[in-house]
Image (cartoon, rainbow, N blue to C red; front, side, top):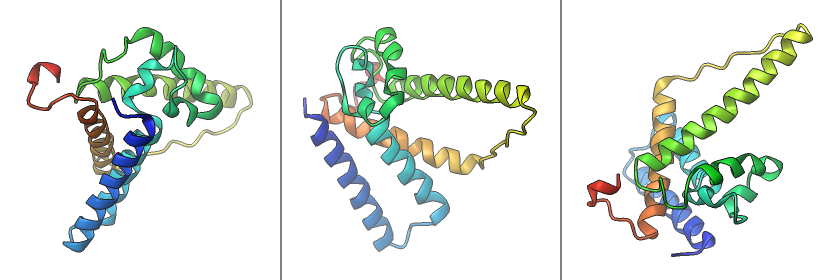
Length: 158
């Protein structure tokens, strides 16, 4: 298993190379590559498959959350290490857990805003932007698990 630094270096190098090739071929459109690159970088730095170790080991991706890193400890207790690592289930479970966290924070914000009679803005994001961001998250996750020894042709692992 490569170290966290190797995972981060390989993922970011792959992102830079991919963006460089895309730019060289004239294939990059800002509305597509920006959300992809942000999702990829976010997944590499803060949504690593190793967050399932957050309850027992201080992993880099948990450290990158700063004071909010403790929010990943229940995830580490709920999911055994490498329990949801594979290519599709892993990012889906991580994003579902993150969505629950965001929803809880948003709900608390609405409750506080309602108590103080404040208006809470609603952010609407175009589905294409969300899709390319999710593709970036899934791509970074796939590179990480391939480095860990998982192989895409083993369909039972998906």
